[in-house]
Length: 120
Image (tube, rainbow, N blue to C red):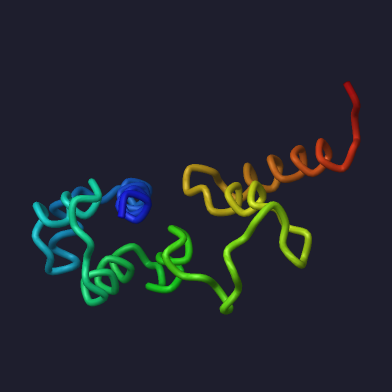
C-alpha cells in the first residue's frame, strides 16, 4: 500500500494538483485521499479507477507502476528478463521524477557501465 500511495502522491504533485482539487475530480474526500497516499487505506478498484482517470493514467498502468499487478501475465522480475532488461532499467523508466530525456540519458550511462565499457 505504501508504494501505491507514494506513486499516487508523486503523480498528483507532478500534475500540480492539491488534495482538494483531486478530491473534487475523483468524488473521494481529501481526507481519504490523504490516507491512501500515506498507505493507511487500501482503496477499492472503483476509487483507483477514479484516481487514475484524474491523473490521466489507466488503472492497469497505475497498478503496474507500483508492482501490484504483473504486466502481460509475466512473473515478477529478477536481475534480468527474457528481453535483457534489468530491474534497474525498469526502475529508471518508471521513476516519475525523471523526464523522458533524463531517463534516456541515465539508461545510456547505466548500460555503458554494465556492458563493461570501463574497468576499475
